[in-house]
Length: 324
Image (tube, rainbow, N blue to C red):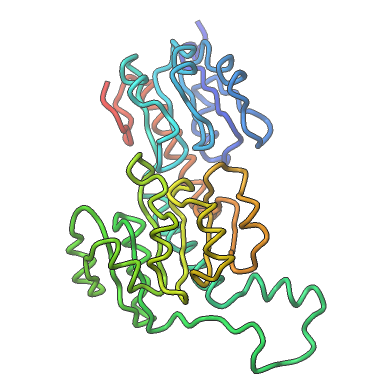
């Protein structure tokens, strides 16, 4: 019998080598060679006879795939979120589901701040302006943006990432508001954050940064009604999950100057982006790169691989999100 028997792993997209380097010595590993999304019907075939699936958030791992993967011992999601996996179906079949929490907290928080500065100070718009040959000298009224220092930052969802974003306000003397189901006493002590309801946060914040998981109750949490509550000088930032924001309503609000701008890294129907947003200069749009630092993506790959190896060794994966 091969030493790799019972350790057949399918990786649905290329991931950083540190994760693959952990798997290859003891596992028979197949990696999809290209970075595009695996078609659903292809993934159904690929999981057959596999002992582990290491997938990305962009793959929908539904009941049909899970049924096809009757030998699976684990579905290791290369992401902190796992709403793309039918965890209930996996649990019924005794399959572990794991994620990669914590490791991307600071990198994602940094990206939220990158979007805050980019949209407030119009850096993406200014870059395009200069490259188009429109810069003919300094002007007192050219590309005026909004200040960040001394303003109010509202955090919707004060978990790990939301709290990390809030803690970065210290050097900017910002007032911090947050809304969450539970109080974050550490955040209140560290930066003087005030817990308020979401409507109050929207009405009083100059920057609103969204950090909630995707659930039925958070789908379109930010809709036309909520956007209308915000200041016309305010900015919306989303690095959580795309469907949390109603993109059509946001495009309309930006077009009509209901709010000043938005910075988005996630979208409702990735990789598609609402065409109305693509037309607007007061929207900074990045392609889901919030965790995209060399160090963090390598750590995520290692963590996902460690979850796979634990399950194949008959142990509880260190980052299991279910119990089997």
